[in-house]
Length: 417
Image: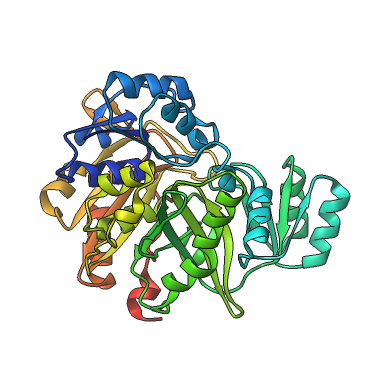
């Protein structure tokens, strides 16, 4: 099978790494890719938001499967264009991708499917915003209705900051705060059958101790030793399957990757949000633990034959990923800084630790930063303590001027706190 992956972040590098290890994959392409992905896949230029261009490239490469990684191309309808060209494509249609593209749409689907989530108001006027903020009180949870690259949510005790964020959005969802730890659970679906992956936890705040602004994610780990062993079964029964069934009932079947962001509250599991694609950085740790070859599962999702797939097979190892971000991320990150130490990690830490590239590019012989989140250093170990040690040992070898990373990824979980 020849596979084309669309995107150029650490999520796509994780996907390409897994696909490159799959014996069924005879050729692997990525568009546009990045400096790290170039080591495992052949790169091609493409406008990832142009469905016709993606379909044309897939045809030229004779791809038997296209995997669309980021949310923006999904919401733009790239999957529809590829499927219209007769090429199997992993990911939801433009209509189904509104599950991530519109918070209000997602809330409506959850209501129809009786999925447990936070009470909320959809607001479009200053008066509605003020009423909603007053109704829920602190802490205020304010979500841009549209795509915002992981930075559209503000959780704050500051009424003025909450109001300013809400007013800056065309349409905004204001909801009650959900207490308890957060969990990310992915599921691969063909619109009927749902195949859950292993849960992970990510770290959204920029600084240690969950301080600082929200980011796209500063690290993740899996498994979750503190979680109820029945959690996946419960979420399948109350969230994932009902959501897939409801979307099919509405005539907008969802195939691809359904991501449920969950809060384990004092009143039970509640959905914080849905995403329509693999999450970043959780994908890095979940795929590090997956033993089942990836390509056939993704193709079965695209072809509607997931019911014939056996349950996924998982390694017992734990996995931890630590994001190295550029100077001043998430505000106005600096780019163009030289990255050193990548060869040292490859020589001294492999195979237990490796570097997945996010915002990088080649500049002559050098690899330089080209985005806010630059690298995801991922490691596996017998348990979270060993995986953490290996990840941070590899992080210490990497040199990037002004770089920042959290030092507490998976620390509480590893210590049993």
